Image (tube, rainbow, N blue to C red; front, side):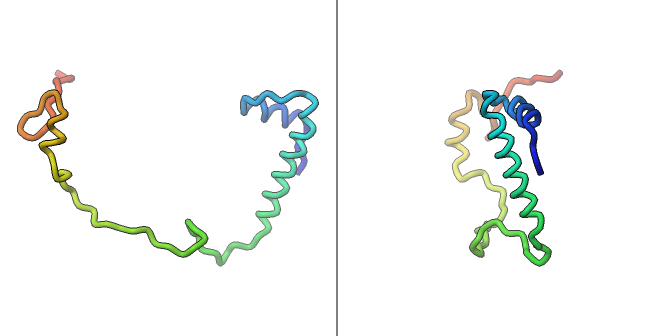
Amino acid sequence: MSIDIETARKVAHLARIKVDEDHLPALAQEFSNILDFIEQLNEVDVDDVEPMVSVTPMRLKRREDVVTDGGFPEKILANAPDAREGFFAVPKMVE
């Protein structure tokens, strides 16, 4: 795919990148090279390839999803300007 100088100018403007007029032909060529490479990637057959998150097989560590109070609610509530009955107290905002 070929990118012309006007398209390169427009992309640079949208990206808020100042490009001198004499550098626009090189930028257009770089954009064309990138798009050609993407077209090459589209030719690769990946039908039998499973998606992966890493090049090495790995499994994320998991933990049981349990709701807790954090283990030290008194220390947490000590930071509050106003705490009552184990909760943060805030002013009423809606009547």
